[in-house]
Image (cartoon, rainbow, N blue to C red; front, side, top):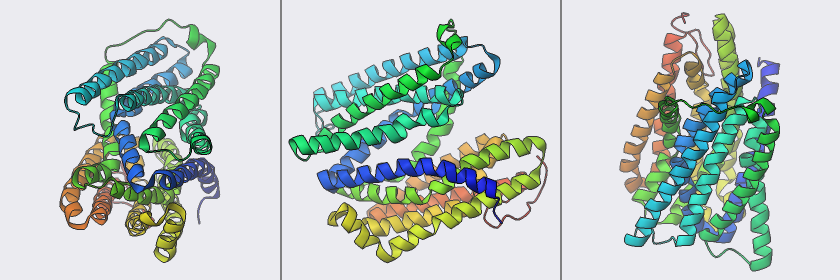
Length: 436
């Protein structure tokens, strides 16, 4: 029987994630109707590339700022925390300036590479990167101050809501957007407003002693941020390998748009899994410190079963009514997304069935093993994509994604069972050892 308290906490976290997922699905529907599969493909690919460029800040500086803010909250010494925020913001500005110079030179001397981009769009992309980079630092600060929900809200909820309002206003005043460039301009506006909202919250949440503290700086922050970025960045790259290589190996951006819709549908199925992981991680850390392997095992098994049960309904719906529903919601040109979504949904079921092995290994001081296997998964995903995409197209990319995920989950599950004595899967057996 599932632990009721655990299920309640997981449900509370999931509701917040569902709100974000619902807004993203609605945004994708609006974009599909406005600019079609081709526009959605170009727009999605651009956003993914920006996400990859932001790895040094989303996964590096973010974690550094979080760590130092948490330490300052505990000991009351804010000089290094303030210094890390200032240094990180300057790093974002320098990074953005360098990126603009590179893009401007490409646009000026190699126009074929940026054939779909004018100078205004290049400036908008760099501005978007600057806004998102500083937002990652602000989010890290808020999490370090133990305000994770308020820290995430501007980007997860406020920005997509404002973007939807901007799209509605644009459509009513000027008609449908002419292409993805207009969407990017509106996204910059929405991101700016959401970031301003986030800055107000961060300012009000920051202790007065932190604001007046004299900033201190350390040179080792560069190596620490690089280490954090490499570990988190591998997982981000693994998440997007299939879409990145679709852009390399396929000619049609419309196919990328179709795949993006399928991938977003699969994300919905994994919401409970992600939320259960976040709650389980806290329990794992506490119970491992106490040496209570039995509670760790129960938590792992319960979270896996809850996530697996929640991952079943959507694949059944897609199997029975997927093509008709996708055609009705997104449009006829997106109907091939049903088969792709079904493959990716099977992958989500596999993730849920193996449970929280990555989280357990991370909190048990085996994060290097997790990073290594994520790198292996990204490499295998890429190699399979190179082989399967030319043969099977979108389905090949989805199969590569699921196969790489299976290898990753199987490896981490075996390691957790062997080294810690915990079976994180829905079976939840006793492991090979009970030593920490």
